[in-house]
Image (cartoon, rainbow, N blue to C red; front, side):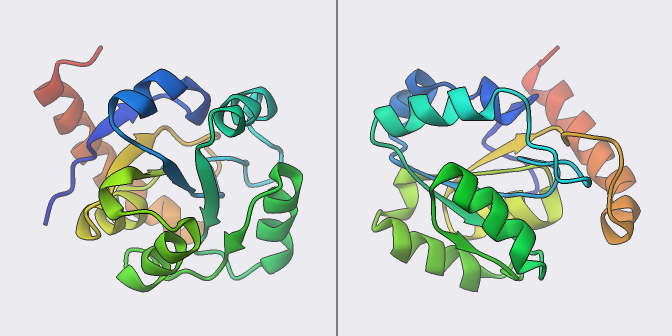
Length: 166
């Protein structure tokens, strides 16, 4: 099982259209919690401008969240004007397959962006999608995520060292 993402960056808004085009990405599967919003439901700064550029370049998007709080996921999706899938059970393939079908793209043309290795990265890698790991929007996490973070940090540190990222 590959725990490493194909790409890492600090935040979603660091991912450029040029980068996506160079990697033949035509669709994005976006995580919500601590990727697009913090635990208090505040959107990541600059996400509106970033998404306008994504949309202008005809890159399709969908939200795939493990959250069972449909109102939260729906709020983010509606604010961006994109479809969503909640209670996705990542890293299981089921949610990723639904998102792929909705995007109507091949796996190799889809990038998955999220802040967790054990859900977003593993799920994307299992489905042969382009995994992009971002740092959490905020340090405050849900209980279950707080438990996994130390192990994910060790994996991320190893990845960053291996790739020579500063």
